[in-house]
Length: 105
Image 1 (cartoon, helix red, strand yellow):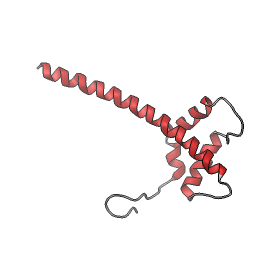
Image 2 (image 1 turned 90 degrees about the vertical axis):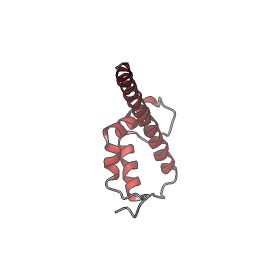
Image 3 (image 1 turned 30 degrees about the vertical axis):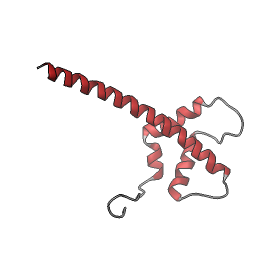
Image 4 (image 1 turned 180 degrees about the vertical axis):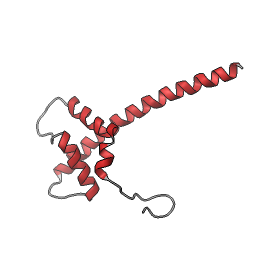
């Protein structure tokens, strides 16, 4: 049954890789949130949709607008934590997104 051992090893390795990918994805999404919030700030007084404005307010409650140069790592960590904790999704609320099959409710 060496194939069974190899399969178990492969599954464990895949699980570790998936965990690393999820962590890195949270980082990418967190930085994208900061960039999007900054970009939307530049377009004020124009506003986006209600859910996106709620998310921008949530991001800005943790990370202020970047007016001057500053060390960016603390801002990134706060934004990443918003993603990891689910606070970013909670800020948006229940939003029906278009689906592949049928209309979103």
